Image 1: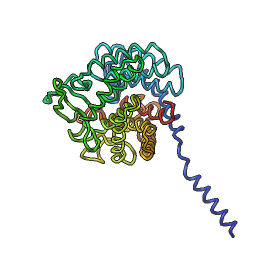
Image 2: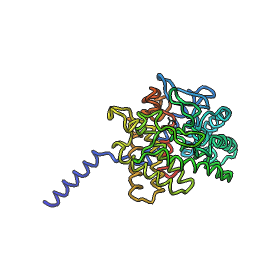
Image 3: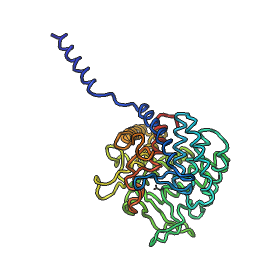
Image 4: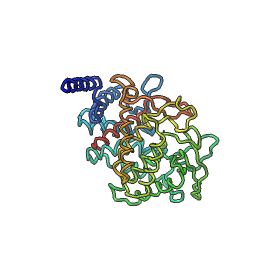
Length: 394
Ligand code: GLY
């Protein structure tokens, strides 16, 4: 009888195993995504007009812009990440072509976005290949960005414009934390301490002025350029001045994690940890935030895959830097959830669709009804980066 029972139990066990397919490993997810990326990004190249860079999809067609757009560096950056993963000569040739074509953006820069543009393109080219040809462009971009720093405000200025009715004098957005990596990289390459000091000063000023007591951050802080006093705090792309715009929170956790990694300043680690704890409390079960954590119609609001990808990349890195073991585990678990969701059919495109982009369902600027529920080039970039970081390739 006992033999019979154990036979039946064994059979049931085998059947239940057969019914439940094994969970795809993160390594297999990564291989699947990078296979897709290779196909999609080669197809995308054929759709891009000469001298342009992919941004998103508009009216069903690939949307592109010149090298001066803030997102130009992400397509070459993603190509460099694909090359890092598969070492494919064809991908490298494309990465070189689009990195070289970034040059005109040095002649007509109009904002702080030089970091996004040149660290993602030339910076990755130099780090991944060691080819010195990319160094001058990277250093020139860093020196242009340094020209936007003021010792009075203690921050680099983000935008030169002020929207109608706002009268900003010296706007600084949380996104600007990301551009500091260009300054720290240039400091490392040249030994120019002044660039490192600017980056550190900007990050310290941002801790003082951009954050609320609950560790959420404002999108925009406007400074008086004459005194350094804060004139105004609010939003440009979020739901409300006092809300937590999702991508901004992503830039914050990524920016302070990166600044701790680059400088070893403990304050930056504390700030990254505080933002991460806030995010871990507020992110939904699938790990993909709504476009603003305080959007009024949640759960009937758009999700933002780009914010999830940025956070996932930051969480993987923070997990390896923090000494708080519990936080480290939670960050890695959340990153895994986010990456699994992004790699699912709900978010990931199939070969030949989505104009060559990998991810669907991001939000650019919802209040302006611009780029809502579309692919965005930076969503793909940080998604690939997060997977490389997860697998310790980066
Ligand atoms: N840096 C602009 C944005 O995140 O939309």
